[in-house]
Image (cartoon, rainbow, N blue to C red):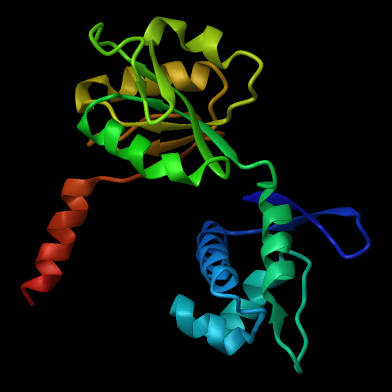
Length: 218
């Protein structure tokens, strides 16, 4: 994966960041938010590594992609490092997404994300059930699937959440891709076929529970 990062001289440079690096950066980002809320002002790489369950050398390598460096005396400034990761991800204006599926799981996701606005915001929900159309759940309106193109027009939405039944997953994913969605968080128990330019993260709850249960029985 090729990503852009702002270096110390305010210039754009192209760097290579693996999916695993991006995954770890999101973990560091979460930890830093908790540290900031706990009024922790600085942290050493060894302590951040312990919280993230990785090696200190891995933390230092990962954070190099942000262009921010700590120092041996004080470690990393929590606020500055958080801002550097924000800049790297380009999340300063928050993450705007849409949701397909207003069933039990969809409603749970809306409830979860509601208090996280405006950092994470589900702009609209789409569903086929006429009894749900027009309702507002956790501050988000439910629209018919047919209005997807109109509703997201001009909003520059690139990510979407899929929480529909397995039999509807692929056709819904096709619709999302056709309208410019380039990242899909997939909660449907189905493998999606998408172009190479589209990133899919599968969240198969049943498969994950089976995995946990297997290890729990050992």
